[in-house]
Length: 457
Ligand code: NCD
Ligand code: ZN
Image (tube, rainbow, N blue to C red; front, top):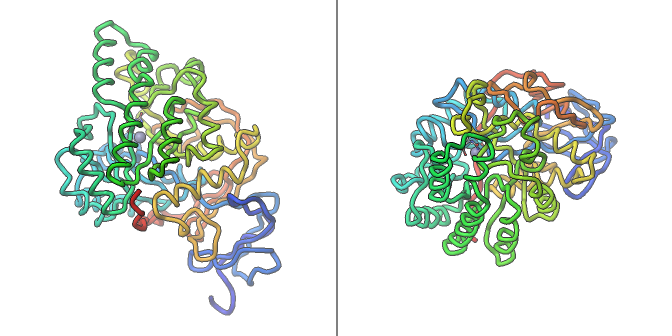
């Protein structure tokens, strides 16, 4: 502190933690929270930000994004994506390895971290890829700074093919030893390949064919197998983009018997079903795994509230607009942006009574930090934590427009959605990065995060 002054105090608002709401203030020095409590108990500060009428929460952590560089800068860049993140109230992101080159060895990890460091407006981690031929690279990738690993059990992408089950078991044994979590795209590759070929041979090119390809059983089988492999090896696992009500009892049962398993779902599985396709862009709704028929969202909301699903991520997967508008569903690039709209959609769910605001902080901030070894440095409002702080105005209404988003690939299935509740200020380690939808800081502020070793399951 200089002359007894701290750098910053956010005062006059309501603090939100998973435990509840309370009026209060946060004091920040050198990028960290140094005090939390009543407005009157705060130290004098060089800058005081009045948060009256607003809520203050920890920055959200999105453990599943595709920020596309290296290799696909026309879809998204680290600069465009992390601007979207900061404006959306997200202060830490974990980037997936299906870039070009894929993040499959230590030098690719270092190269991606350097690329991100030069551009990023928020903190970040990068995933390492697990394949048949890079098991000797898992420890070096962790050493080089991989925050976690990604296992594609369902993949037709030649950049990141699905490894065989023998390699998967060996990989999980290595990660158990390293104490690092494995995030799993849980679908059965042979089922997807077989059904896809059959549907194409039958001349199907519609969105429903994509759903038929990704039948419920393809994900149920993969969740079941990977939970068993996790139990066998002790490797902590994380189920990516949970989308199917039939998987939820399997996740709950694995948790009950002590498997170190966490799960995420995404706003598109909570808010959309196939019935929304006409207003959600038709075949632009294509995403892997698919948005299914009505009847899955209710159980997914319940699982979020009960803790069977631990957290919300986005699977932010932007593509160039032309790639989202092709005649055959098999040619439509899967995925869409999400990192900028997730918080406002979930705050709308608070107004709708789906979840409470403390629930939101648990699933968007605390749970991801805990699962991936970043708590309490990230995802918490505690003295000593990074001052990643988001001020939200629960009454700010708006309409989502792809054209307003900061991602280069801005075709969104939430086009025209009305939202209530908006992040209005985002601080990264005490620096104001975004305010009222605008970036107010220079690029390159973001830094890599370093997870703690996790216990084996
Ligand atoms: C992802 C992407 O575009 O990177 N797309 C998606 O629909 N989730 C990767 C993937 O195919 O899983
Ligand atoms: Zn993904």
